[in-house]
Length: 128
Image (cartoon, rainbow, N blue to C red; front, side):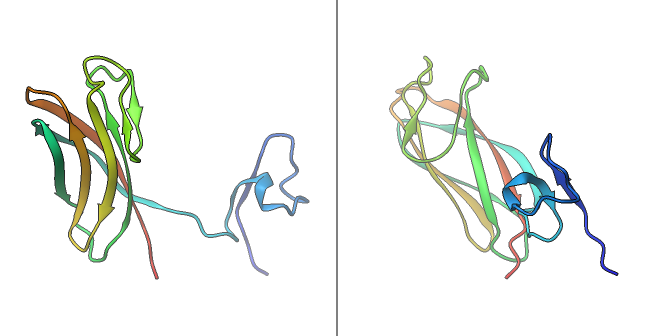
């Protein structure tokens, strides 16, 4: 006898449904598992920036990051996006990558003064 764990969406019967989209969680399907998370802060000046932090994993993991305004009124995913809220409307977040040792954040600032930017990041298990 095999066992599994399932959680269905509201109004769905977890014992009878078969469509994977009707589950919130089903142990028969693999899911991304968050193995680490944190906040990274960097001081940046005008121009393109590349900032790195060590991820501490023994392999190259998958990571996602969000750029955060100090006011917490706006959060941005990477993808050549710009904040809409002043005074951060001249800061952009292009992409986030990982390599064997680091998470690397890329973006651009058109601000003439040094600004502290924050990223919230999540590192996922990515076994091959």
